[in-house]
Image (tube, rainbow, N blue to C red; front, side, top):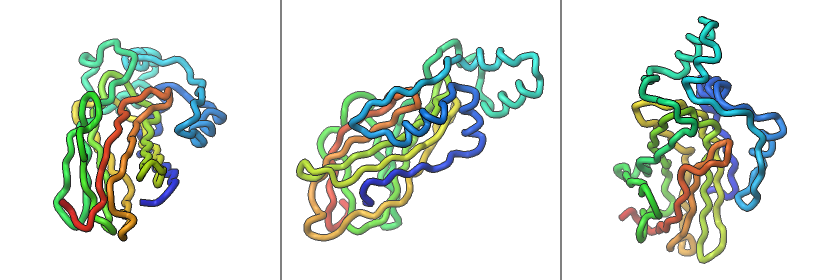
Length: 220
């Protein structure tokens, strides 16, 4: 694991343009988001929020713009979206992918934290985390991942990554994190505690869990 990473991976161009359908951030608020720290709450000034139906209704007389919006939103059934203003993001599973073994698939608890030891990593191994999640009701803008890791009460790793903007759809999304390498050696082995969060531009939290994991000589 690399310490104090701040990774901003670009989502597809369509994802960036979807953000234009939602609420907009000023240059100053974007900078604030990039400099955001887990321990500091920053207020981001966003414009008014609209339901998806309202987004389409705003430009219903402009056929080209209306078709562009419908193309960005994909094949969602607008009749099933309703008038819900707030997006819903539900995290379904976490996969640990490594060439050394079969994928480890872990269900994400709907409420609360995983009980006991959630997973074990092999020291010195390369791996990727892949989250599977569902988006409902409305566009979620600027979904961001943060993860902090401690060992014996000392922070040893902190990761931030901008995931992107997503519209609601029937099929779940998957997002694979950049490859990481676990530390190796006697002092690297042991039990770690971690906190993983996913928040959007509004600082609305969709996942906030605390868990423990081990680094050992081999996979379990």
